[in-house]
Length: 183
Image (cartoon, rainbow, N blue to C red):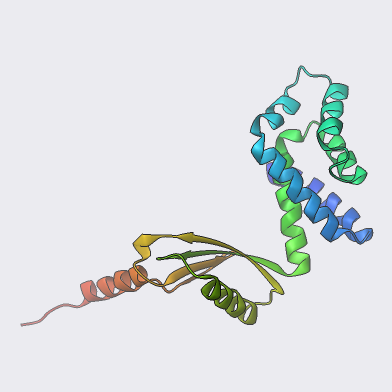
């Protein structure tokens, strides 16, 4: 049910933004709203509280976002409140971000390495990803995982490229355990 809600409202926002040729500006606004919501997690609970009248909730939305995002975005958030779906706002907005990234051929890569990568190494990884995927732009999220020993693990969507020493050692150990020693 939650996926259906996020898809329905996320698709609606996407279609309007695409029709008005405002995908990029709406994407920036959605990311800004998501940042505000992440910094103020209680805000979603307050807006979702059933005893607060809808008009008061709408006023809270307008005071929080009017002048900071477009009137279209404030209107969209107000509709979400009116429909009683504000508890799903993060899922809705994240779905919209995914749709825009898909339409604009923007890939998100999670890159884990055994050590912190230099800026030159990061650029080389991103350039390689751009040449080996269909994406025009890569949003890279880097993290360090010392248990990898060496190499890196790259995840883009449901694809994983694992060139870590840890995985190579585990693979060798599995292969060696299959070998039977004969006298």
